[in-house]
Figure 1 (tube, rainbow over the protein chains, first blue to last red):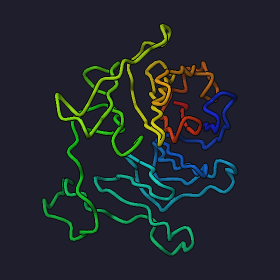
Figure 2 (figure 1 turned 180 degrees about the vertical axis):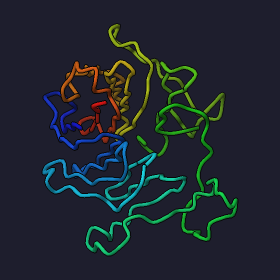
Figure 3 (figure 1 turned 90 degrees about the vertical axis):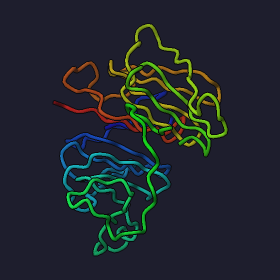
Figure 4 (figure 1 turned 30 degrees about the vertical axis):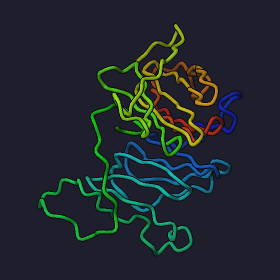
Length: 132
Length: 113
């Protein structure tokens, strides 16, 4: 992966991560990477040696970074939000399951987790950053 | 999302179109088309779009290049493969993802297949 802090006006910084996938970056140059293989990695753009796996996930289908440490992913049909407490305490599960209200579950039953928010209606679109 | 009122989207049926969302609009749609100015060398379907906090829109094009739209200046900037990729012009490394934080801060991945 490469990243820039000057709009690619000069050669970008390169990080060899030996895998690729969805990437998100925040203003502190923290790069969240969902490998096309498995898992999510948190990469310090300024010092890639400070990178680490975030939990032990399977294949991650989507990833979005909002405010710093406000990271959302979907994997195996479920939506998760990053729990920033994990940064200070590795015993904390880094991913909190959120009920988005539209998940297809094999049991067709609602999750008991009511801490999530309702998902907006999403129209058919390719690669959209927002939907009508 | 660029602000609380605008964001970007592309349409799978019209892969060279970009739309901006404005929740204050009511008719005919909250989505309005943006006239994308492709470089003649880079007329290509938009595979993915990412919207930064300042309204900058990054578009990953199918031909491995990127097109950046400034909501402030309404100008488009073209980023050739060699501006953004490691090991450019290696067809074995397709452009995988583009994320825009703002006009200056962006990240991309490409992959070796």
